[in-house]
Length: 276
Image (tube, rainbow, N blue to C red; front, side, top):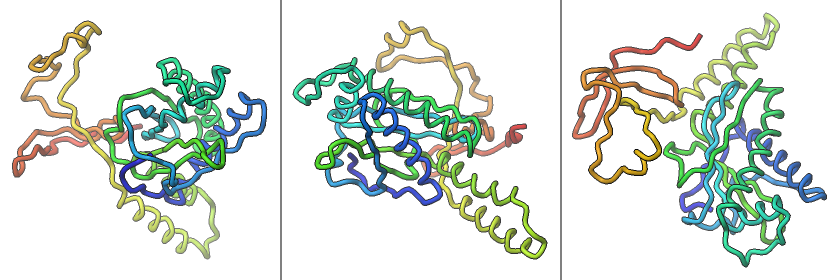
C-alpha cells in the first residue's frame, strides 16, 4: 500500500502493532460472530499496492503514558470490507465507497482503539488514543511501518500502520525506564549502568520532527470556507515576538527566525523548562 520502501518496525516497538492486531482480531470476531485472526508483518506484502487518492487515512494521537503520533492507511477495498461488516451489508466490492462507509470504518477502528488502550494500561499506564480521519499522508516522517493483515488468506485485507519518531522513541524508552527501576544486586551494578547507557545511546540517534509556531488564530467555519489564494490571516503574535519550537505538540524552546543559505532557521533564545 505504499510507494516508498517500508522501514521495518524495530523489535522494541513491535509490541505496539501486535497489540493493535490482537485488538482488531477481537473486534472482528465480535462483529462477525466467529473467530477472526489478524497478523502483523513489517515487510510490505505483495498485494500492498500503491498509494491511491481513494485511500482512507486515519491519524492517531497517543497521550498519557505514551506520547506520539501514528497513522493508519486503508485502501478502498479494505475500507469497504470493514464498513460492510459493521453495517451488516452484503460483502461485495461492486459498490462505491461512500462517506457513510468511511465513517463506519472509523467507528470500527475506534472500537479497536478502546481495546488497545486497555491493553496498554498494564505497561504504560493510562494512554488515551484519539483517531480522526484526515486528508492524505501525515506531515511527520515515519519512523517505522507495519501492516495488519486479516481476512481471506489468498487476498487479505491490509492496514498500513506508521509510527512517528516520537512514539517509537517512547516505546523504546519504556525498556530504559524498566531497567532503571529494577533492583539489581551490588555485584551487577556496573553492568546495569552500562546497559542503561547503551539504551540511552540508542535513543540519542532517534530523529524527531520539530515544527515552528508563528502564532495562532481562531476562525469561524464560514471564514475558513471563504479563504482563497491571496487571503491574509492575521495571527495573535507580533513580528518581534519569539517563535515557538514544538516537539510532538509540546513547547520545547523559543527563538528568533533567521535565514541560513536561503532557508529558514531558528536561533534559540529560551529553552522551555521540563514538564513537572
